[in-house]
Length: 235
Image (cartoon, rainbow, N blue to C red):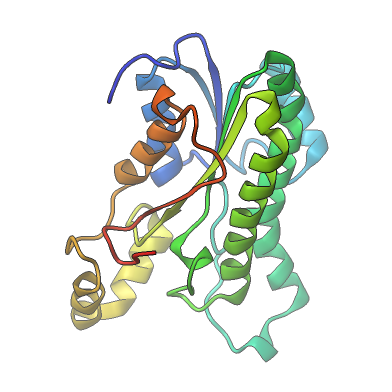
């Protein structure tokens, strides 16, 4: 499926410092797009002014947006009664607010062009429960899925598709490596046994889902959630 289907298009990917975001950016380059990647150290994707300034710097045009920024912001599970307002808000800001701000910022140019592709990177946690037990993370990822569907409904008339990838367990960054190590050998075996393909995912597995959603093969696909998880969830 590798080709040059995005030749002449401009893509913007958030969360590209490592792992999944970095591989998504590479896949879109393989497809011929001019790719801009940002991470929180460069641009705060939850800050509308910072995002507007950045878009102006790159010329204002974005044909493909991939919202990959997010994560658990360094948090671990604690009982709900011990979760602070600040901890809850920080996770929602990193995952949901960034998706909203970035989508709002690129939509006018996509509408004017009559074409656009938006892909949101949610999580299996958004369709079920979080393996880490972080309540705000599950909630934010579920909200991303709802936002995807609403935007697909709203923007389809302008030639813009909006879809979502829900990854399973992927060892893609220091946070997920720490999570993997915390399970120990027995826990790791148990996790893998729950995956139909008997392996954890790679960043490239997820990036190839984005490749599909941004290709001509998905021209009539919108509002969909694709679980890329090796068959650990089947619905």
